[in-house]
Amino acid sequence: MNILETVADQSDTMRLPLYAVTVTAVAREEAPALLSLHWHGFFRQTPLRLPGVDMPARPVPQSMAQFEMPHGTPDGIDELERLLLEAAWQLGAWDVERLERPAWWRLGAPATEVSDGRRAFGYYDEDEGFDAGQLMAEAPDREELMRLAAHRGYLRWLFRPRKHGIWAAVREEGDDTLDDSGGRALPCPVEPQPRQAGAAARRTVYRLGRTDRIVLGGS
Image (cartoon, rainbow, N blue to C red; front, side, top):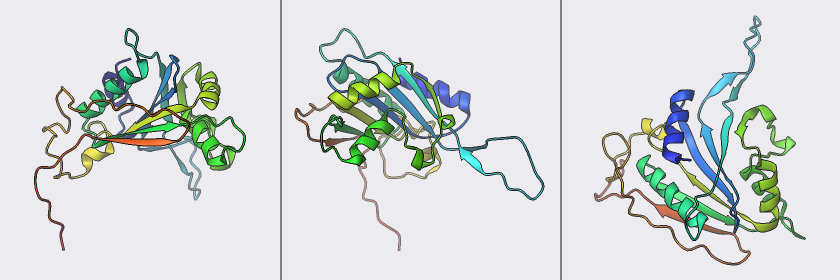
């Protein structure tokens, strides 16, 4: 899967701006990964209109697709991260966040770890007010991937694209790396950093944007 082309094609199809793009992969596994597109927009669940009754709008469902890990490299996860950084760079993201999360199928695991792990694979608790209609998934192995992650841990990357995103409407004068389209041309100068061994949760932020000017705040 070409992440950049997928984001662009889906954005053109949906005709909506993106809030964020996330990718989730099982740690230390040559298993498929999941790409999620988080849209900014609302829709009416029913075309029914009743006089005097305000029918609430619902968020546009998150789109999720499954794709194979890159082959032909010593470490598929490292290659996946390189491709993610390139896509985020071209889409004008300010940064990319990588979360390394431990297995949550263990004695004494905090409830927040369990909930975060399930959400990373598109499974939400009933008390969060989420229903199956809020996820458009083409990921046949999603449940099995979540079970693997529960025992082995997982990685989750997140970036907020400027191109095809709501951030394109936000005036930005502090990033001198962007071109007129709001994106950037390859090559991406940021390289993947080594992952940490062990069971602890870790967070790594790759800064892509840069300012070469002094920005003065208004009064």
